Length: 191
Image (cartoon, rainbow, N blue to C red; front, side, top):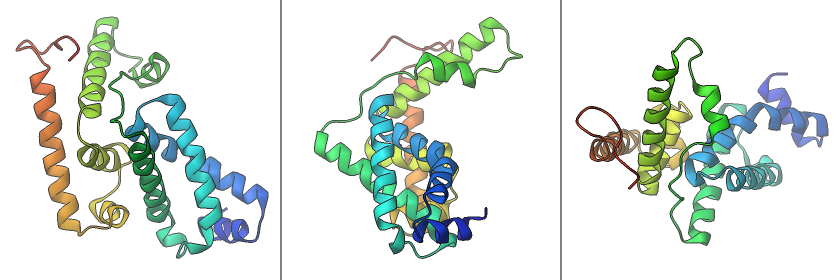
């Protein structure tokens, strides 16, 4: 079912359509929440909270063409509210082993996979040490794969601001990675 018909069915109270909508976007919302809070259980709870808000406020969405940006804006606001309530930065932690298994290239040797996993852990650790503004732009751009126009709509900023924030966030991430990397390319101990 195409998104406009799916949204119309959801607005009419069709439970199967709602289930289909959730299934279609649950991975994206979970990726967003994981980018903000880092913890698997917290991310899943937050994803459920986001879907409840989407369900309650679906009638305020302006249509299928703006649904994804609207949905991500609801998700972003919910994540930021969660972080404010907890008044803590997301904990610095590596990706769980079960998630790393799915990311590994099956053609790579054991040594190559170990190097790739170490790089992923280093990037995840560096990402978790960035401020929320930098982390969210990297999540939206590089994990969610949004374009600058979509990011600008989600963050409610001009496109130029989204681009400059992305540039600054990439520089901040690179600085953390360089700070935590030995000259031979291996990761230094936990910071």
